[in-house]
Image 1: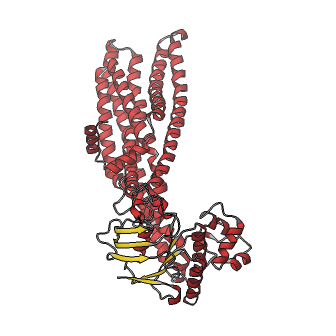
Image 2: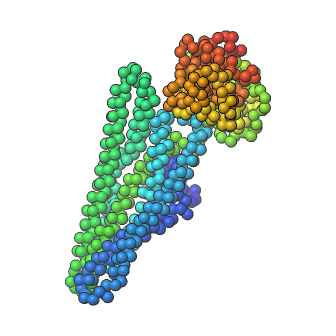
Length: 562
């Protein structure tokens, strides 16, 4: 497709480039899709031809005596009856195979697109909404080939063939059939748009809203119950569910209206065929067999053509899903996110001193930098405390150091500019332990092995001893002990220690700890901080971000933001 044709296509369908990219990913390649079109076309032809030949056979049988005159018609009826079932099965088989294969490719492509964006580029997308986009909206894309492209192509082609065939028998009847097809499409599509068009576009956002509420309720169930806020939260869930139910009902009502419109205009086409065909039969210019044929063909044709208005409705839902996916995974990575694969330099071996000169950074979509330009030297093995009020940019700095967001100025690691180092390579040397350490619903062993999957049990037990969890691990029954869903069986301090153990196993030479004592009781925070610092190696740099005071003997330098 040329650039001029592509621009025209976008203008006609009012597609944004990112939407068009997502929709293009949803369509299987032609080598996989053409069998679906072929079997779909043969199925549609069989549907129309079966009723036509049946009508011809019944009328013909009433006018002749010997069955030998009916042999061809009988064979044709049997052929089209078998073909209708077989071709429909093959259409569904090949269509679902192509769609589901493409669906797998879409999921992989979407995750690959999200990787460079996470986590900084996804900060404005709520977890429940993101889950809905990754599951429900992606699932909706599979209907583009099966419920939009294939029904439109096959229905239009068969309708053209049927109109031509009826016109060869009776031109007025053929023109009447054509008018009924066009008018039924306009009426059904317009009425469906008026009744359920808005709901078709709102179903995905409403489903995302409900998903957000369900996720928040499950994730924060204990807190909501403790503060007496569970019932209001459940009321919001019920209201969201009610809005979604109403939208689905309106959408179903629109589909029912399409079916009614198709039945109505099918009857009009039949009456029109009889109106134009009775007099020629009486006058002897048209044989009765052909009259029943042109009268009953519209009934079968409208069964096939009813897919077109439904395809238009399906297109609205698919497009909304494509828009939502394009929003969360745009083709162009925001300028604030480091480009994957950029920089070819290797991370220097040995210790990693850090030099920041005029460094500033901002989150995607933010107008200004989160903090003023920084000038600071962090020697290898330092224990630096970064403090400041809420909103001063502490978390922004943490994400900048591990290159989740880009920076301005100069950020050098062991004398090498960070931009010149591939982001994946840099993150093998600089690690971040976030405030909310994620604990998987697995054993203690599995929660550590993903940091280094070849670690032995002895190494795992040794690193747990270093972070002060040796006794706790043995009391729980060893490395195979479960930690519960979302770490429900561990405290906030234990979760931080497990996260530090991962960082030690991964052998990060620079560790950024973002508010490590935020979820720990004040009485235990000092001991936790002392243990975290003691567990790190002498050449390992610790950058500790905290808004609470820390024992001065644990740190070697201080940086205050704001």
